[in-house]
Length: 276
Image (cartoon, rainbow, N blue to C red; front, side, top):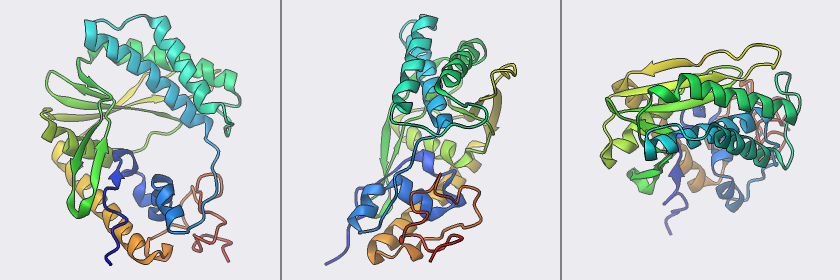
C-alpha cells in the first residue's frame, strides 16, 4: 500500500526562509505530530523571550491595522498596547528563555510597548490595508498545500508588508515570495514585497526606527518555489522511509543545540556534534 502520510500536509511560508539553515530541524519544528507518528523522538523546547516580544508586537500592529481597515484611523493606542502586552504574557506564561537584551518579563513588556509605539509612529500611517492576517491556502503538487497568513496586504499599489522583530535582521525573501504565490490566486494584486524590521534593543538604548527591505517579486517567487520544492521532497522521503538521515541536517548551524532544536541529543538526529 502506498505511503500517503504527507498528503494534506500544509507548508507555512514562515518556514521557507529558515529552512536551509537545517532542513531536519525545520521539519521537526514544523511537523512534530508527523515525527511522532513515525516513531521519531523529539524533546520539548522552551520558547524564547525574543519570540514572545515578537508575538506581542505583532498583536499591537494587528489592532491598529484592523482598526484602519474598518474605519480609516488607527484606533485607540491604549487598546493596541493592552492587547500587545496580553499576547506577550500568554506566550511567556509557560516559561521562557531570557537573553541579554530581554532579561525578564518586565523588560519584555516595556520593549513591546515602545515597539508598538514605533510601529504606530513610523509604519502604520503609510499603510492602507485591504487584508490583515487573513489566511489563504493554495494546493500544490503531491497532495501538499501552502497555508499563508501575511501580516498586511496593502493597497496603492498592491503589495505585502511583513513585520519582523528581533536583535538581528535576516532575509525573509522566500517567505515573502511564498506569500505572493499564495495570495495572488485569491485576487490580490502583488506589485511589491516589503520586510519591515523593528529592532528589539536594550531599554537603556533608544528605540531605533524601523528598517525596510524590498524584494523583487519575480525573484522572491522563484526563491520560494525552490524552497517549497525542497520541503516537499524532504517530507516525502521522510514519510516513505521513516529514516531522518534522508533529510539533510546542518551540524554547522549556530542553532544546532538543545536550546533551539527538538532533535538535538535524541536518537532522531545523529548528525550533530556529540551525537552517538
